[in-house]
Length: 234
Image (cartoon, rainbow, N blue to C red; front, side, top):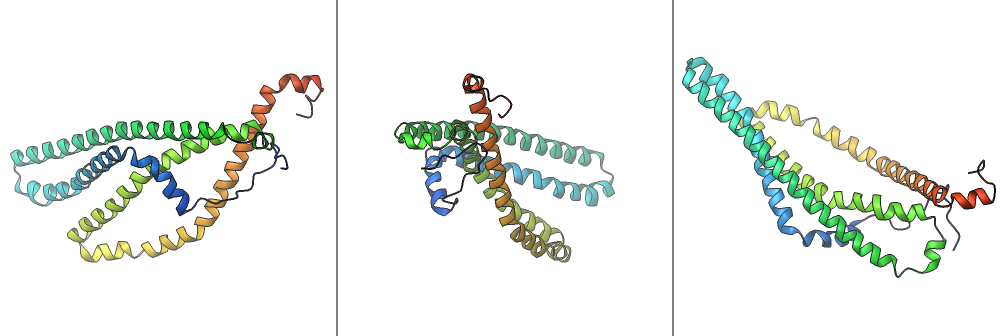
């Protein structure tokens, strides 16, 4: 196998697809209760946050014109309690997702480290140590973040969109249609830049891998560099 140097980009043999995503989801099933609880907390927090505009509308349209100080204080108190509860749920959800995310990282790295023990010597001879290191550290972090926060945020954002649309149509149907008229333009722009963004992320990942490989070999191989008098070249 041809050796891959630190200044050469690795070729992505198998792009990330549905099959790899399903395989990665097996790590989520071990902590499905934590994910479900986190999702429920996120939905409750979102509902409370989105209820504040409704409270504001009610206060401006009904409470202030009635000039009732007692009702105004009551609704201001409800408004503050709603915000505090939403903040509390968000904090609990963040702690729970951190715990689940770190557990997923531990499982993936444990399986990956065990897998590395059975790889042939050709695998280590064909690529710098730094590129193997970045796969174990950076790539695992990216996968874990996608499986924990990324998956929850995706579901939460979809739920938020429908909740927000419900509130919008409840308040003003005509204005809601006017606002939603710009959605097709945004979707078109996303579809146009999607492939370019993926290519840019792959290029960034390759350059980061090359940088780590260079630093790893330069530090661990410093004595060899000095023995062969290659300080200026390196």
